[in-house]
Image (tube, rainbow, N blue to C red; front, side, top):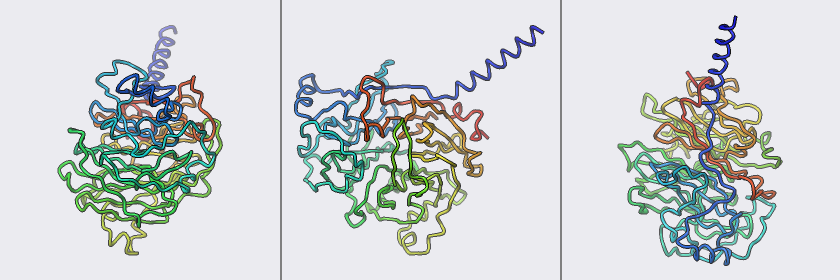
Length: 437
């Protein structure tokens, strides 16, 4: 009898270990972001002049390339030190709250005009305040200047793609410093390869762009496409690197779902009407095409369309492509998601679940139903508003959570940890879920 109890206890312990091993682990955490300033004097001067207001710096997007872990800090409010940054993973040595290093330089992250007034509180109007932004287009002194970026992506050709909104102090006194632009950096040399301003006739009054997804084969680097969702005006900008040209695509599936625009995150209730936001490039099909998966933020439904449709400007905008866009399924109640990414090693799409403080997954070989959505991790402490996630070349998932609604509508507690980056091995994370085939 004793031996049977011992075996049972061992089995229980083993099962508990397997469950725990599938959880995300906290890699970095900050109460407030700090930066690797050129000197203590430079930091003190930035604080004195309002160019660095610590509590106004909130991380939003991330990406990993080799030993660089990129972290974006949009200019939601005045006093953002640098919008495009990285952590050198080879030098952190177990440090939990490393300083961010501006990329490609401090100079490239400096605003071309002074928009750093004395400290001011955020407007309660949220991102809608961007509509009243004062136009302040200027000639950039450094073509590599990045004004404000949300999401970024490193491609298979060692390039970093950045969508620069050109908009500063979004929640305070919004100013359009430069037009929306696509920036492409060579990660091996840290040099700017391309800056492409998105033509004004492809933008709308309510345009708000905060994501960029790249579609490219590693042996066809020149033939790259970028997809930029316009969550405010419900469209997608398609950009061809080879042609150095972009065009706008519209579809009903890019709109938000009015039944799923209510959010409750970290004790904050708010309503958003964000349209198409999350995108993921799927695996190669038999005909060498790839499906582009996408969803609106204020929605629980997933859709897809062939990249061949998106990359054919005359066809996709010619009125005959409507039914080429397909509904994949529904994630179920409270299934709103900011970001998604496809993992070729497991065949699963990983995605955020903001109303559930969670990360979930779905294997593309299964029907897209609530029962086939796997729960990776859920934590009302460490995963409050999981804003972005990426999968690196080592089969590891990186997740950034940042309590954005509290930052926007209330006030963060600067004595508590507010921002986190968590990681986990994909194959371990999906064990015991419907994503594991």
